[in-house]
Image (tube, rainbow, N blue to C red; front, side, top):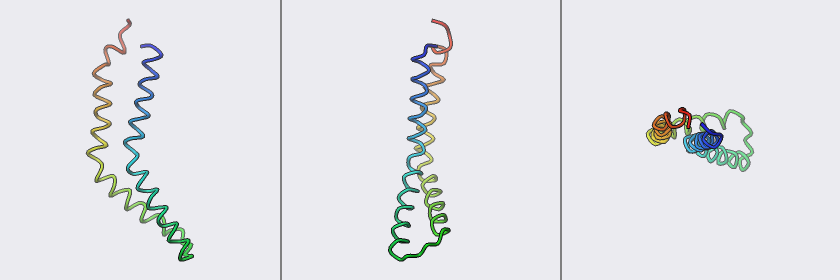
Length: 91
């Protein structure tokens, strides 16, 4: 296994992690922004008002995107295990 192989695996792992977490992070950010705007307009500064909608939306997003997220992660793992002998055996 060369340094290039290790760097490539690390880059792909970070990319897959970013892709798999993006739907939940983006939905939480959009809901948080919407609630912040609502709080600014109405001047309601309740701290707990932001947490419950974010948790609910993130959970719904997780359930909706779970098949896609699991396919993304599993394809990375299958590719990694498929090339395992080429990566581990000396060249």
